[in-house]
Every structure is written in C-alpha cells, then in structure tokens.
Length: 295
Image (cartoon, rainbow, N blue to C red; front, side):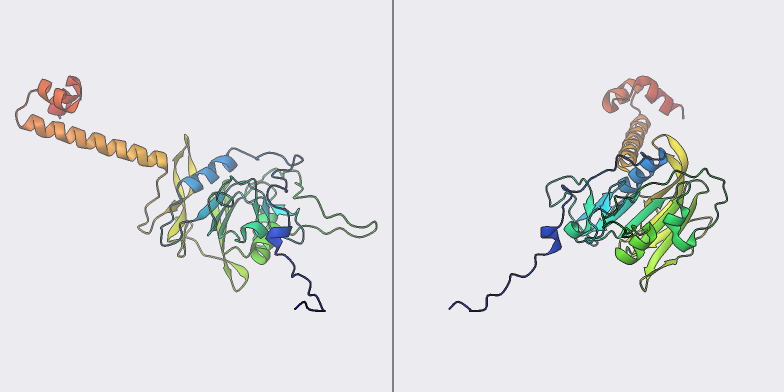
C-alpha cells in the first residue's frame, strides 16, 4: 500500500556528492616549486625506511608534497604536508589508481603521522604557538597562497583558510606531528593529548621518537643518503636499529655473500688445495685467492 505521505530520500553521504580527487586540482600554478632539494630527498628516506608490521596494518599510504583536502564545507581548501602517513587505506586510490591528491571525505581516514620540514619564514605556520625566533638568520620566503578562497557576495568578508597547526590539531586531529629544521637539526615532536598538541621531551644528543601504535620509531640519523652526508629523519625498529632502505638491504646482502665466499675460499686453502683449484671452485681470481693466502 502506497503511503499518502511520501518520505524524502535521506541525504547522500559526502563521499558520494562532493568532489573527488579527479575533480580537485593537484597543484596550484601560482605556487613556487619545492624550496630546496632537501624537501625532495628527506620524504624519500622516510618512505623507503618505513616498515610496518602485519600486526599494525596491511594497508597504508605515504604521501609527500601532495594536496591534502581536509574540509568538506570548503572543498577547495587544502594543505600540502611535506610527508604524511595514513593507516587503514589502500596503497592505490580505491584500490586501482595512483593518487593525484588526498581527499579526506573520500578516503575517510586522516593521517596518523605528519612531518613538516621547516622552511624560512614558515615557523609560525608549522609550529603554531611553539614558534620561537630562529637561531639562524634566514631570508623569508614570499607568502604562498594555500588555495582559492570561497567566493562571497560583494561587501562580505571572505573566509581565510586555517593554519597548518589548526588543521592538523583541531580539524584532522593527527595523533603525531613532527617538525624538523635542517638548518639547526632540531626536531620538534608533538603528540595529540586531550585534543591539544603537547610538545614531547627529546634528548638533544639522541633525538628519537617511539610511536607505540606503529611499533617503530623516528629518529635523527647522521649518515649518507643519495650521496649526501648530513642529519636525516629515518625510522628505527624496536631494537633501536636503523631500518634499511631497499638499496641498503641489497648492499648488505651482497656484502654478506662476499664474506661467505671469502670464508669458503679460506677453508679450501686450509685443506691444502692449490690457488688454482680454489679459484676454479669459488669463481674468485687467482690474485684474490693469493691475497687470502697471505693474510
């Protein structure tokens, strides 16, 4: 029986009605490019040393310099974190496509960790009320427009997008927020406690951040990455060991294999085999075998 009082259909959820990543711009041509090479290399190291155990999740996504659209009431507003990690989302958008941007009302998961790399003139934006006068004199960058403001009627005051700090703390409620300055190698670690970021104490001689939910930590490592030797943020495991990149793992396996082969050659020499025989068995040159014999 048809009701004489037809009921309207319930409103559709935002992920079905609001713009998707295909509709929103992935870059702003009025913005400058990356401020320096460090902003390219550091996020690479963070992604390449990230190893999450299966007990944490089998789905995660890391983004670097990717537009993060955060407010369904202002679909054009975005922030552009230097690096972030989201848990519980597939590596590919909807399991099939590379992301042009990260749209909160589509993904329905806010980042779990955000890392910002301090740039000249961005201290207040990145650190909020914790911003101090930098110890090093830096030339300020020109102001960057975050996004187009929402059109308003003539005479009305347009709304201004909130700062990164407010977006991460109050809108997205990102649990862990890290700010790193390459100019003085200073790390700021903030944890969301009771809805507010609280600065966490760090050892200035050994800046390390343990994140129990992920079962890994983030620390300041002095070493060489992509031919550049300096201080870098990178992940470490529950034993305190720095997690290796894929290239470092390959070099480690190659070194281990070489060490094992050399030990086999030494053992064969000790049995009385000739240099020529050991060379034929191991594939080492006779010169290499002779060097082992003289050690």
